[in-house]
Image (spheres, rainbow, N blue to C red):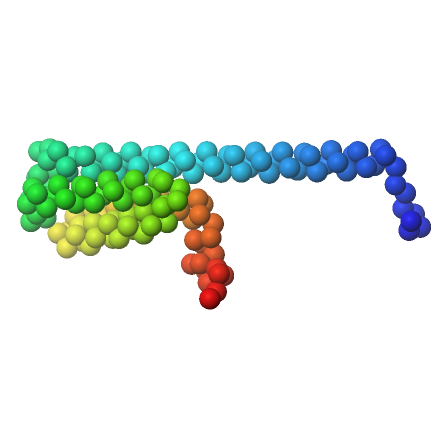
Length: 153
């Protein structure tokens, strides 16, 4: 034993309680993060699924929007199918990164189309930002790769 150091059962149990409290706080933080991520993922999924279903069933609003972009109803329906498949891949944990990349590409195309037709790009950009924020929180390894600190081969 080092001079000035003493070990008693009391200090051992206090140390154990501290570890228990820290562990519980980390579990709460992890659970809060998971809940936040799934709520955000669900909101993104709901918004994009509503948009996709609107395109697939060819509502009047969707047909007018597609026509303003010079797209036929069939092409717009196909875009809705692609959108809904991308959302499904985004929501499944195992394929979430692939879904993120597909949604990012899809929304990038939406932004480009809106720019080409002098329409507001705020909504697709906001959804794109939410997709990436959710993906980075959901898949921390994605942020490491983006920052160049991932698994180097």
